[in-house]
Image (cartoon, rainbow, N blue to C red; front, top):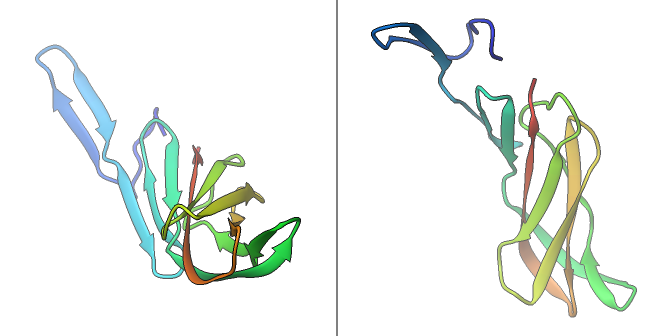
Length: 129
């Protein structure tokens, strides 16, 4: 966060000829189960899940849906983030997501027919401080 020097991310100090400019490098992280995150000095954080393979086989309200896939974010947000989901396979399917908390959310794939092995990816954007 602005106003203090973090010890877990590189701090860059530059002299512009008049003043010292202190800034922080973007911080990147990866978890083999949860996905990736990027923290920016502004307080913004973006988390991206791994790709989940889901079967879209349950009839629901005239469409087919997959089971809900829960996702624990690779880093915790300071407030509940916005979350979105993407179907990575084709345009005959669509994805939805819902935010559960500052630590995780969930998503699923929808279709007009039955599909197996479809890929879901989620992304959450919010503040980390």
